Length: 460
Image (tube, rainbow, N blue to C red):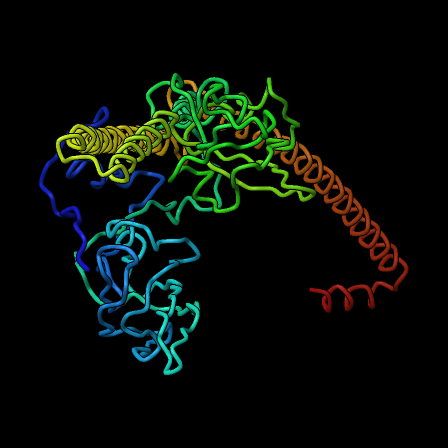
């Protein structure tokens, strides 16, 4: 299998948002550039190989998608399992989703993916005629395989922003405008009532449907009079209700998301908020059994389109059964051809519009995130915050000065106390010296003159 892909090195460069925050390469699906490193954030980059990889299996393009050749099928450990899948078996499930009637494009999207990633495939064994003339049933078996066959490869740079090491663990400051930017990001994905935006439609004006026609909605000519109002009369082919495989004609819808239904509320509850892709739980009753089915809403226009196509095919089928002439069948064939061409044209234009719309939203969100990253700072912001910072510094210094003054007073008091004690000690010493001199003089006066002279000579 082969798959188309965008060129990751496309050179188209168009400005998307203000400044140089966001640019795109190749339009929708292209790369949205992140901002550069700042005083708070550091840009990290890793160069790696990217690509789309297959599984080593060739399958028929048309349903029932029979296996043509098993060339290099591998399990999750990388071991060959070519003998597990047989030529002629049909692919029926990919990761639990039915694909037996799907297009080759749908199969490629489901099978191709990143290198070494895995997926679960289910195959049906083709019925083989035995010698007795009987046939085996189509047994289903599953295999888990690894994507490893390169379909297309390219170099890609993975980049992200991290906090700088010197600001990790530190308080960060942001400008007050960051709040309005965050609200702008919110507005990209929800409306003012906080309902998820429907990216498939510009406005919430068209109706949604799940492809069920009820007896109450049918005309008198087509109504099955044996059915009650809430019972399904028709399941539109390829609709969510039909694709679920759980509903059929005659089932009665008794509740939607747990809310009981009646003839007046059934359609409104099924439509919900008219957002394509939104889900609801439908409770159906069949005989004495009640069960739940989760369905996704789709465009009512698409359902009507398919309904019209089925009617055209029914008309052609009746003409064939009536053995009508080619001339009689030609208008029916032309109508089917015109309807098919118009359906494909609508699909292509819707797909292109959706791609542009989603890319516009992606660009806006990336631009807003870049703006918010630019509003983060490890330090202070602007004159107002600078003034507050200086005031805090002055207050700290004043506090330190005040503490120093108190300490100085305490040390001065201690010094004066010690100085007073020093003077007191010196006074005691002087008194002691004077007392000693007086006592020595008295002792000398008490000696005879001859001994007094000898003592004075000895002292001298």
